[in-house]
Image (tube, rainbow over all chains, first blue to last red; front, side, top):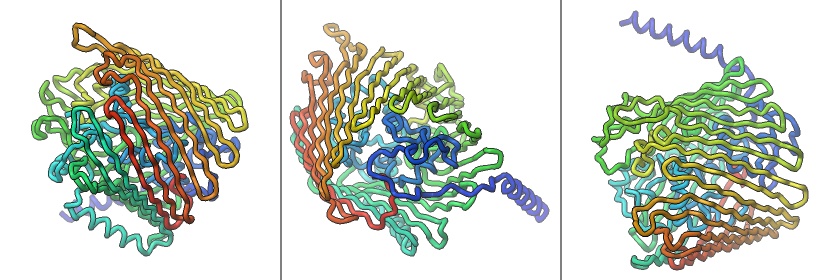
Length: 155
Length: 477
C-alpha cells in the first residue's frame, strides 16, 4: 500500500513539475481596460491603429465593434474571452446568453434601441416563420436551456 | 413573457433540471448569502441591481383575457481583491414574482442563479481557475455549468483550457419518461488546445462530451441524444484588412438504429475584408446537418436529432461608413433547408450618430421564403414571405434619455398561412423616457403598443430602476 502511494505521489509530483515547466512565463494580459471608453460601440483601432492585441496576436481591427462583429462575435468570445472581459462583465453577456432569462432581452433593454437585441417586435408570430426557415438559429439558445417557454406549446 | 401562461410546479421545475430555483427551495438563497459574506471584505466591490415592474393585459381570441403584473429583480455582484488581488467573486441572478396572476410562467415566483463563481487569475500565462456556476463558451461548448474550469498559456504559443461539472439544464424534455431515454448527461467535460500563430491568429481543436457513461443503444422510440463533439476552430487576422473566422464540429457519438447522414455537425465560416477606410465587406457560409448538430438537445421534440436534414446558408454584407453621422449596411442571405425549401433575405440598415446626443436608425428587409407544404387539398402550400421595416431614435440630453422604436412586419400569405389568423401585418411601437438621477441611479419607463396576428391589441407598461454601487467601468454600457 505504501509502495503504491509512494509511486502515485512520485508520478503526480513529476506530472506537476512537467506541467509547470510547460506553462508560459509571460506576464498575464491586463484584466481591465486602463481607460474608460466613450458611450457607444468602440472602434479599437482608432487608438491602437495597426497594433495587435498582446494576448491574442490578432489585430485590434478584429475587435472593432462593427455591425458585422456585433452580429457574429461568437468566434472572438470563444477564443478570446479574456479580451472581452477587459471591458465587459459577464452580466453583459448574460442579458442574452443567460441560459435562463427572466424576459426577452429586447424588453429588458427596450430603452436601448441602438443595441442589437434578438426578437424585437412581438416575436411570437415571427418565430413560426423563422423557425421553419432556420431551426438551427433557435437551437443555439433554446436547444439545451432557456426552453421552458418553448415547452408550453412544443410538448 | 407574452406567451400563453404555463404552470410548472417546483417539483416539475426540479424534474426539468431547469437551473432555476423555486423560492420554496432555500439552498440557493443560503448559497447567495454565503457568497455575499465572502464578498463583504472585497477591496473593490461592484453591485448592480435592476428592478423592473411590468403590467399588461393580454387579449387573445379564443382565450380568456389575462392580466399580468410581474416584478423582476436582477442582481449582479463583482468583487475583486478577496484577500488577494487575484481572487474575485462574480455573481448574477434574477428573481421574478407575479403580483397578480399566479399562473404566470413557472409559477407565482421563480428565479435563476445565472452564474456565481470564484475566480483566481494568475500573474503569468493568462492562467485562471474558476469554480462555481458559470457559463462556458469554449470550443464546442456553450453551457451553463456547476463545476470548475481552468486555462493557461503554454510555451511555444500553445494554450489549453478545460472544464467539467454538472450541466444546469440537462434533462431531456421528451414526453417519454427519463428512465426510458437514459441519456447520461449527469455531467459534462470539455477541453480545448489552441495554437497561436505569430502575427496571424489562432487555431484550435476541442472536445466536449455529455455524460460519464457510454451512450446507450438507441432505437426508433428511444433516440439517444448523447453528445461527443469534436471541434476545430480558427481566427486568422494576419493584417488589418483580412479577417477569417470559422469552425467545424464533428459528432463522434456512436448511435445504433439511428440514421446519421453525416458526422459533420457544422461548418460555419466568415470572411471579413476591409476594402478601404470606409468600405468593409463580409461573407458567410454555414452548413449544419441537423441529426449531428442537434445531438445533446434537451428539447428533442422541437430539435429532433432523428430527423435528417441539412441547412445551408450563404450570405454577405457591405458596410459603408463615409464619415460624418451616417453608416449604411446592405446585406443579403440565401438559405436552403433540405426538407422545406429555400429563402432569401435582403435589405439595408441605416444608422445616424448626430452630435448633441441623438442616435437614430432604420432598416427595411424583404424575405422571399419557400413554399411550406401543408395537408390541405384546397391549399397545399403557403408562403412565409414577409417584409420588415423598423425606425428608431434615442436622444440623450443631460440626465434625460428618450427613445422611440417602431417595427412593422407585413406578411404575404395571410389568407392561407394558418399561423396568421388572416392578419397581414403586425406592429409594435415602444416609447421610453428615463432620468439619470445620480451617477449610480437611473429610473426609466417604457410604454409599448402592439397589434399582432395572435393578440388583437396589447398595451404594456414597464418601470425600470437601475442602481450601481461602485463603478469600475465594466459591465457594458
